Image 1: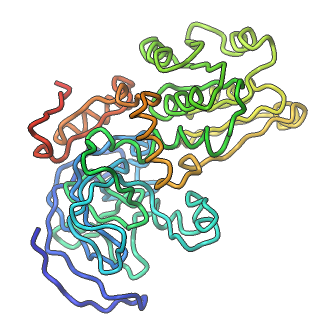
Image 2: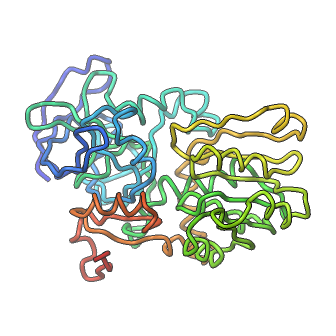
Image 3: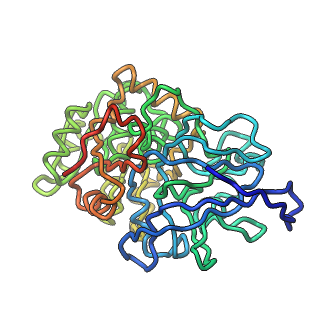
Length: 400
């Protein structure tokens, strides 16, 4: 990669930063709910705490679909936040990474606020401006620009639907140089969220029970983790039989097709009328979110995880207070990514977290099909190969 150094005065008073002379192919959303359109755009300035990553692969997450309408990240935008790649260049203040390192990317956080310093980076004081509202720096600069100078937003501090991207050091997880990044890409969001929801937020007792509503990547991540953590009753709820069978293969002790069965009656039957100790909803459907509360036992805990505009209406006295139930807010699993992702890799290597069974590979050019397949349930975890030269002596099998 060729770069051209330019000394620019930073209005925030931070260290100088470097203008990059680098173009990148990116899948851009230009209009609300519009298709991804491929464009050649420019990378912006490299700040001291940032790196340039050559993206190898990126998962598609339901959260990408949730922001395509422009209600969160302003349009035009480069979405994608389950990226993995190889560091191409590091900023002047980066200490723990170097060019050539293989990395998985996750969300951004400031590292210095009270939440970050107490191990709660997903509630960082600066979470929204770093991850949600487009990634504009305090000095007004952006990470992507169109050829005419129009700023292009990124999402969750990544914008991994691009051949190259800029992200901060805090978003990086270094992985083994021999690891296959095509496989590890989706660990930085959905699977990590499911994992952390169980280990960091719920912390279930051995022998407890859990119901997981929705068997996508987040739900199955939570379900596989519940098995690792020693839950003895693990109930998967969905409307697609093939997904339910996969859930059974991955550790569900019971499966319920909510199209053909009464969920509350079946869970009452399975738990001898007590209800489940824990529930996770990943569907975002109003009546399903409510059901995830109603199936709880006394002192049970429900966690709604979907990125959705839907609401849930219930009577707090009847649904929560009298049964001492809890409705718990969890963002990105309440984890420190640099601790969670290596654990997931270890569990995978031990055969305890076989997330590769959820993955299907797509060429970058097929991003619109991959997104559609994710929405309609054809594929649980689409992973796009953005750098087809990466390990081309060990090719993956693409969806045809």
